[in-house]
Length: 224
Image 1 (cartoon, rainbow, N blue to C red):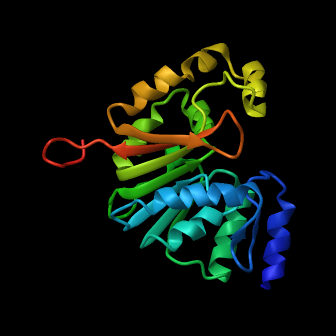
Image 2 (cartoon, helix red, strand yellow; image 1 turned 180 degrees about the vertical axis):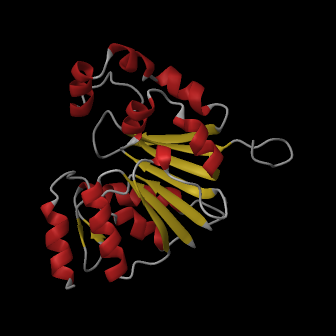
């Protein structure tokens, strides 16, 4: 299929506006260009680059970016139309090192065949969906079990800000779910598995940020 056909199909999916890029050159545009610069800088910190995972790969740009930096890249995407498009597109365009894509949520994504943990995991503005699906931050355990290196989370940990999603969720989420989605609960959930190393603002909105987490190890260097 001609590249222009992929571009047209990609652009036809107007949402979200933070995933705009040129297929022919794989050049990010607009907000994605700003996001990509930050994500690339964190991914490049990895001392070990065997395997990476993207949770919620959406329009696929970061799968391609990670494929040029890691030996293997896996991904999961719950929206079927996005999964089908990117699964076909990455084969036709010969994206490097994409090993396995899962159609569905991270919560039901099987472990790799060799059960090898990931060196880098990226969640781009999707953690609130995982929380809503799980009903808590309990999915942090699965992230911990799948990671031996670092995790980069872009998003937010409460609904207190003026982000459009936060405002809408304060009227749509059940009260109990809203109460459980807060900064203290997030830090308590990551504590057994990860250490928060750094945060910086996300260009997707003033209430969102990047959170860079390092896997906690015991005194012998083994994963907990």
